[in-house]
Amino acid sequence: MKLVLVFFLLISSVFSKDISTRYNVYVTLLGDVGYADVTLKEHDDNYEIKLIANTIGVAATLLKERVETFTSRGKIVKGRYIPDIFIAIKETRKKSRVRTYYFNHEKKEVKFIEENAKLVNVTKFDHKNFEIVSEEVKKTSVEETILDVYKDSDVLTSYLNTKTTCSSVEKFYKLIAFGAHD
Image (cartoon, rainbow, N blue to C red; front, side, top):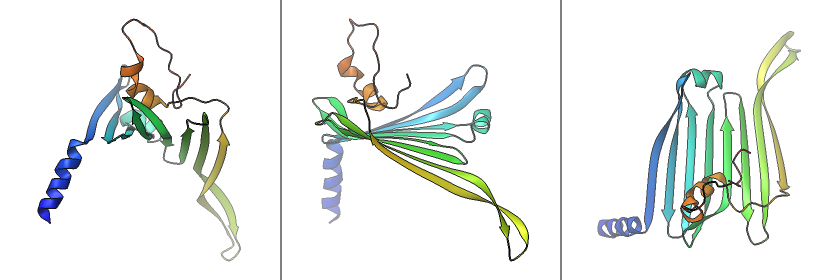
């Protein structure tokens, strides 16, 4: 049984690729403000790339321990990364926002779901103890829509696809992708 397991692990590693790295984020006036861990996993014709950005030091204090996570999963077709789903999560001590993009390339449409949660202080009067009580309550909201604009990639796949979309002739490229700022 052990031999079969070892054989399976060896074979699966031949057809899989896992790459991970860490980038330090440095700002001249503030010094080190954070780091980003990036992981790319490929198996057969599927991929997942994940970027987790963490703040540290003064930046973490100013940004309320902010962590941002970006995940893209999809297919690899002729060396090009085609997303099925892109998830962008922004979290602080008291708030979180999850933006999920579901790509339907055949219909050329993207379903967008945004989930927000935040802790808010609620003050109530406790009739039993005859006192005012304050507590943190989690407020949530969910919005779902089909976007008016279709883009065939997200910011992570756009980066991965630069090897197939960029040439030495062009000097400037316009990045058009979900998850990228204007």
